[in-house]
Length: 256
Image (cartoon, rainbow, N blue to C red; front, side):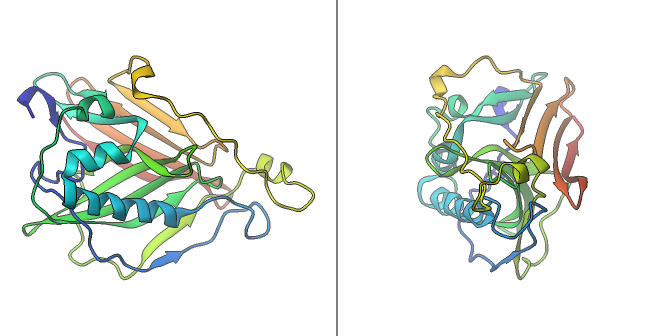
């Protein structure tokens, strides 16, 4: 890893030296689904992202952080990198290519997840610990055509210290389902299954704007945006539909 391409977005790295591993997970506490009508009319499965987070941590312990993150990344995943006068976003798969450093163990565990109604996007937040140091992370996960979740953004939260003690429960929340989702219900009262999308191959990725990247759930119930300023300041923002309005679930900024 060179000085000109220093990753600052990898929660696995912690303070640039923490390779993170699997901690004993807390039980999951599911909180109410949003308003599409009767329970069960959402395809959200936040527990699947919690499982993906824990698998990522375990893989990082066993094979090293770069290999684990690369395997768990979506083809369109991006990383925030820093360097002398050149902060910006890069395609994760291209950055990981050829990097196989194995870092010592630590712990990483998700504490909260927020899912879109349709389950196409999920935000996770948690903490890492390594050699007495703690920190927090956030990630954006996307449901893939093969049924798996893969991360789109993996970001250290420099403004948040890790909690002194892990919470007793992992909290999982689901966004309100939009009106058009209700209208699309079939005669049996169940929504149509989401169409499978053809995954984009890393070699087919278009040029990436290093100063910004954004996305939203297929049903519009959750969105995210990552912006980077020339001086190195970055902001990760995620919003969702909840209790009849739009709320911010993540708004993290770091000055350059």
